[in-house]
Image (cartoon, rainbow, N blue to C red; front, top):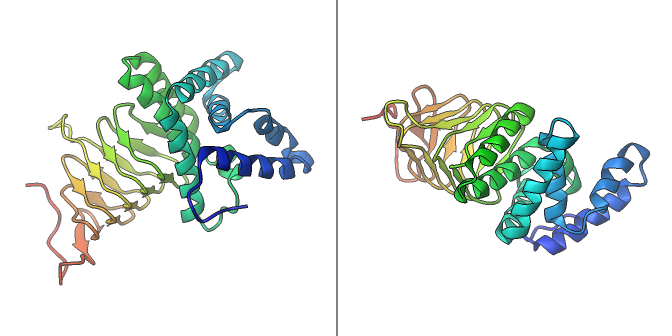
Amino acid sequence: MVTDAMVSADALWQLIRGESEVAASDPPLRGSSAAILGHPDLGHAVAFVIGQRLGTGNDRRALLTRIASEAFHAEPDLVEAATRDLQGIIRRDPATRGFLPPLLNFKGYVALQAWRVSHWLWCRGRTDLALLMQSQSSERLQVSIHPSASIGTSVFLDHATGIIVGAFASIGDEVTMLQNVTIGRQQADPDAAPRIGRGVFIGAGATIIGDVSVGDFAKIGAGSVVLADVPPGCTAVGVTARLTNCPDVSRTTPSLRGA
């Protein structure tokens, strides 16, 4: 059962267990469903999936599962974020009918939860483990998010291949990002990283570089290269990107080039 309202982690876990029990009656799905049913709560289940998807070999899988379990146990907000991310997928992907498939199969969801663990480690000075999580996500899932980045909740990495989010980038709540997106600093200004507002949609192959702000509910067109600020509600398209469909702009503005 999928609900329109955001539910708690405990309530979501009961929905996932219900889906798993149904899936367990289908022999090809029995193993993965049984693995989910063997966990006491969502945090343990997500930690297990992270270990299975990022690990190479039993020892590495066990290590990553243990690290993720430690993070989820120590920081309940991580479980809440995982809960909201999963529900965000359901709200914005009409092809997804349940919570179990994205939990098990959507690598964008797994990569985002792995980043949350790596960020937790980074903030506690455990940088080597944080960078290990990033490296494994990049190798196994083709999603590389630096542990120092900041990301909100209810975020949807759709298709999630070739996504790069660099150090100190900031991404708000309810952002949707398609494949082959790059968000990073300019080489000439290593401390300046993009800031992505709430509800932004970033199309496939888009590049957002440098000390730029993308306002709430803006849209970045596929293949666009954004080098300067995008006001809230505007659409930026092209190389270099131009603004269109801005709420308070009556005509398209010149190219968005850095000063």
